[in-house]
Length: 119
Length: 111
Image (tube, rainbow over all chains, first blue to last red; front, side, top):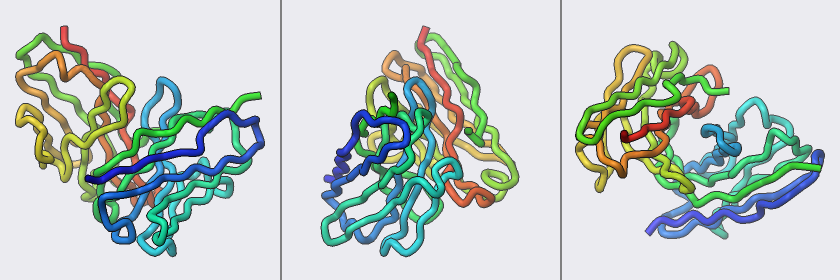
């Protein structure tokens, strides 16, 4: 059974940093692109970033470029999102998701972890 | 900022059919990228409902169907049931943004 479990969310002040983790199990992690998707309270879904199988290609939504870094450790079956220079508008539930194919869709999602940016 | 446009809400009586349009542009759906649909029940993570424009994962009732034409996609729910009350999002890939894009989301209400 495919499982994605996020952790690392919490309350942080504007300008602060946070690192999210996603533990994957039930599939060959190194064989899939992976994504982060966020959802602000009461708002819609926004794709944040994704990363290639070997970590050598990464793509970001414009609003987080230069501030967020996606990475992965295939030996640990884990996906990460390093978030720096956090802003109030980054407040959201962050979901880890598995990419099905390239430029296709997201077939499995974690339960999400809440990031709150507030002073 | 969502690139794909959906109506904020649709509603119907039990047993009726409702449709949710998803309007994109020449850099996403119009460029030939597939449209996918997710269902998000309150307080839960999104779940794939339709992938590749019209394909249902196993376990998804055949009351749900999808289509794509030109720069738009569409989700239809026939035989509406109370358990279908949820938020629905379309998704595609955008070549000018080099990333996934989601629709604005549609809340389905069963009257």
